[in-house]
Length: 240
Image (tube, rainbow, N blue to C red; front, side, top):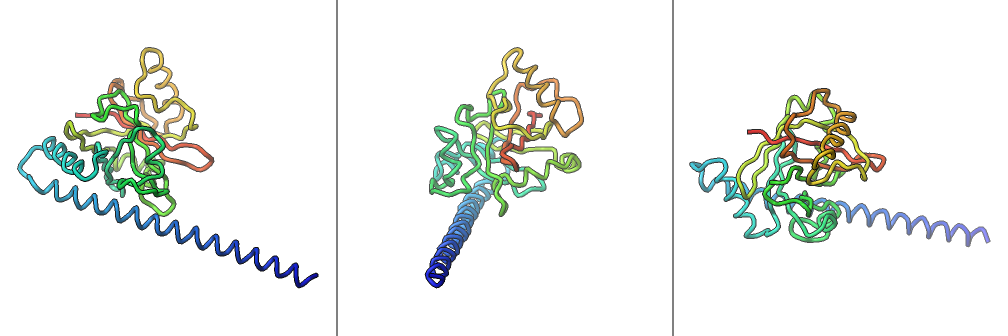
């Protein structure tokens, strides 16, 4: 009886080990596929930028995105944050689920892609344009947003650069905070009293101990995961 019990335990342990190895290999392969896909697009974007060095920044941004759309029709923008690894295309799907688990090449991948909220206008004309990305333990995606939890880092790298189909846009970070997934920090617009409620909400959580910008007509919200089923939120207002 003891021998049979030991045999069953060994089989269970081997099954657990095999499953764990399978998950590790699958995770590694998915990460490698994500990195290769992003690198491919980054190289293509670089070539696009080098085509016309004499053109204005707005013209370069527009042609960059137009060029990328020939291969990736759902790319709407490009996001870059100084002193981080965040230098990625931004796609937009028909909902906020698809690109959580699909790559820029529309292959199933747990690392997903950086994507714009499906409710937003692709030209960043909404009051609040929301961008999502995973917080991958291995790096990549929006993991580097967590560097902004240090107020000193915000001072060193306060700007977010966006290339879009309407030109180049620059945003200055004004808020970094943790939020509950159901909180109202990712609405495309805040009419009337909703804006005052939003300002009070942000001010009460913000790690940047400065007054919020008076004008919040156009800002962006970057969201990624934090421990404990919370969300790290980085918000930045449009500047000239």
